[in-house]
Image 1 (cartoon, one colour):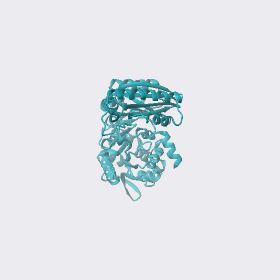
Image 2 (cartoon, helix red, strand yellow):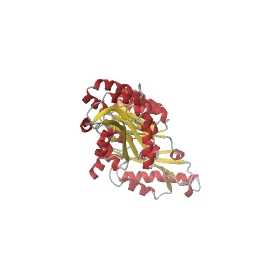
Image 3 (cartoon, helix red, strand yellow):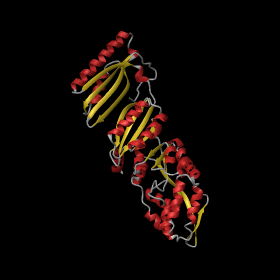
Length: 414
């Protein structure tokens, strides 16, 4: 349960009562319930309310106020009064009440909290059973489950207490692969919603495909370039060297092709929704690419991005020379770009998100407060904080706790 309300100058002990109301939801239930309880000398240790398909569950953990009771008999009488008052209120509004007495210390303890976000397309019962079993095996307890989205994927968030974060993340990552779902495990806390800067890779992340392969198609060397690209993405070739090799194959290409390719770029599904929503929520958004500035400049203008860094092709007499203007934007440069953007924006690195798919993104992903491997190579998925293998970039919003309903409200207001 959540939302602790314990006065800092009061020590609670003894016995408390867990009051759980359930039944059809209607306006005013919470007000009626707590107004009645306010007539008693008690404290609220914990409270949580959930409404699912019109059905209400309201749970409150309350204890006799020790500053108003001089003896155990006084406290016992208050416990009886709590139960009688709650029963009368609930009977009057036609709902069901469950009563359970527990040690008050259970409400004061704040166990380790973890958010588990599950993405499925579709999401099957067997996958949820696997998640629940793994949480239990890791010593965790599912305190709450809510749906964040029904499309473009089903996104479910579980609030877990008690489990070790690292162990749960490892186990769920293993189970997710066999269940055809994505699972993101993040420590709970204010820092999750405090993320304020998002930096994305471009090729095969913000856009579909690789720009250099599009250029190679115009130069008639697509196959050779694709082979070098694949090796670099797997981490088999140093990115800087692989880029120089590929660009040499483009020597002599007419500079007019650059504008043509920039117009041919196709955004990843959900890219516009992701950026538009983040911008409306006050995030700084940028891109850093091992590709080229003629594409990133176009994207920055089209999507109203705050930052853009990329490589520049050397041009002479209207044609590519086959050289890259140094220094090359490699994996170290991407991480440095994240640090630079965070400093300029006044955002701590802990409040940044990096999204990428290749080995060239590894340093950036590990520098960010949250590193997301998006449809990434295995080596990248293993190193990132979490992975998304759905084809929709806006599913990243769900990892930040932003629901589809909130996205639609923002769109309506925009």
